Image 1 (tube, rainbow, N blue to C red):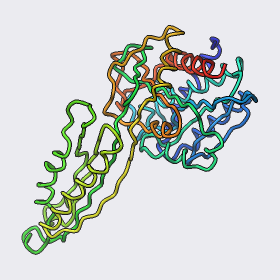
Image 2: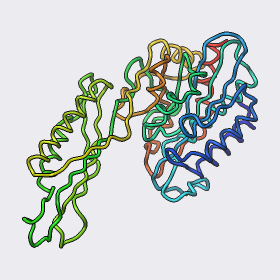
Image 3: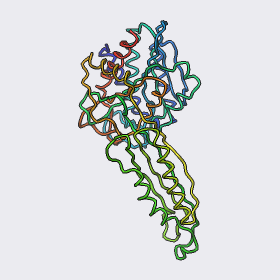
Image 4: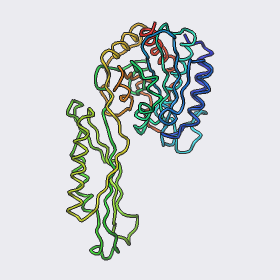
Length: 381
């Protein structure tokens, strides 16, 4: 079990991470801090620069058995933190407002427990993954040649999810997080003097048609197999000037589907709408896809292992609030492993994820670590 000294040290470390947030793809200092802590735990190996700034620590029993991976995320968000806490972000415009600092600390707590009570067979991999917030990190880690040597048979992750009672875990077999993808649409015409708009080619009418048409591609509703949602997140037409008729426009739309397979058809439909509008209004159209998240789907065996572990140590659990529209790139690890995501409650009235006043509750550190430890020892002895 974790001692009082452990909890004090882990809390101090979590708050130190909180003060120095790094966004997706920039997690060099965070990764270095994690490596320094892992070295104190004497794992069999520490891998660095996985898929960018990713770090993995391998605790190897030396006896044949399965590999069990536990994942946390390194990155923070490009959001200004609003807090009076002495450990608030010291980096303007960036903050650990999703709890990844806490998730990392839970894994380090697990490492302390494994050092004191080693597994009897197989391997545990503590995976500190980069770039979760933009959906690129898990894919990059799995594609890294070094990952093949630590590829897991089982994979587990905990994400704190406000709105649930403190210490309560939501999980279920099947869909947990939707697939999503960002589509950037650029329309190009020709500017002109605002007094003579007929001399240019404005995208204004095309944009006026596209906004409702794109939104109609998916209007949400019940989160069943047919779920689709298109959300316009950003629109810009021309420049902030009264003397120029615009010659260009940009539209950002986020597309969501319950599963991965329908996403391609939704993308095709969006592109078709844009190309038709571009032709109608004599515009050029270009596309860019960003923030591609696979659906996160819990394997039945992995979910049952996690539920049995939580029941054994008295952690209340159920399937409240699942599945979720929000996306999570942990699903990529489930493409080649039996994987399960657990949603851990920080309290029903806790600030929501991505809110400027969010902070991870340190009292969750031992809860998450205990769940992970029980899963590890249930699978590996």
